[in-house]
Image (cartoon, rainbow, N blue to C red):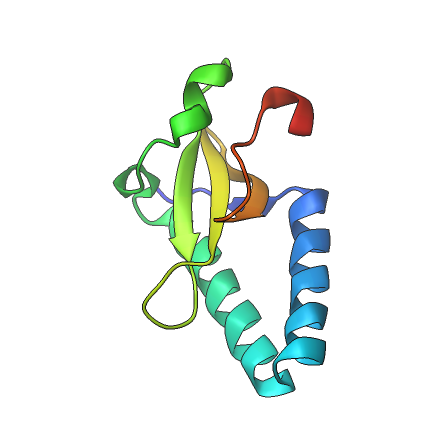
Length: 107
């Protein structure tokens, strides 16, 4: 059974900010491809979300945290951290792969 994919407000804000950065520092076309592709990847979490690996920082949380990697081209640039609940897939945060691990205080 498919569950809805719900994005935390901080995820929505991150996506808006990152898209604006792409548009200003790369190109508007790249920004559109990046956000459309990322949103499509996030939407696909409703199809067997267990296929994504458990995030290393999952041990710091009282619930399992998994990660989806995304990027344009061959190398992922960002990680979306999410948890699987009985009624939804909840995307907690998106981080650049160069950023350190997410800790409970970051949420």
